Image (tube, rainbow, N blue to C red):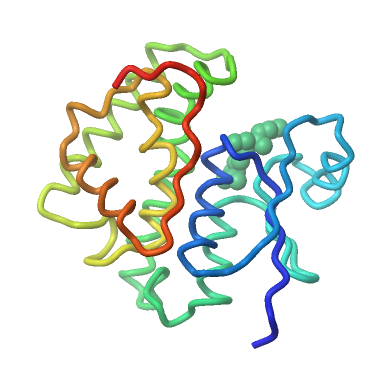
Length: 208
Ligand SMILES: N[C@@H](CCC(=O)N[C@@H](CS)C(=O)NCC(=O)O)C(=O)O
């Protein structure tokens, strides 16, 4: 395999960016990180060229451009760790991981992630509805994780990487994790994986 030439466009406080950075680190892949914080900076024009949606993260791997955090996870697993089990090849295993990639892009994005976006970045949304979505998915995850080590298999998979960042940082949005002991134990398991790197804490005071 040729030496990878990887660049990740992102933002350190973005959970979508963090899930890509975390997986690169877990795979031990070196990469260059380009921060795109200000939409007027030159890197933002480059980002729009790479991803017309203008969203981070974007991964560039030589001639290959991948936008969308979950797509980046799937690409990296298939390209650099195909037999490792991060993305199972069997039909049921693949479906179980995909189910949680959808949860990460759905209930996690519009629950704990949006609650944090409102506090840290001033996003406008219906706080009660957002917190209800967060409670619903965290309760579901907590029940699911009771007696299981990881979300989709007996070992860590892309399901755990996709869901980790915004769940771990839910308290920054005023969503306490105190009622969810199985979720907290799962977070600790992900944090113990070799190569784990945390997302920086936001400067906003946390509830827990
Ligand atoms: N589905 C996308 C969502 C990424 C996303 O929402 N990124 C945010 C930052 S965390 C962003 O770039 N927002 C700016 C915009 O949507 O214009 C993914 O998983 O990568």
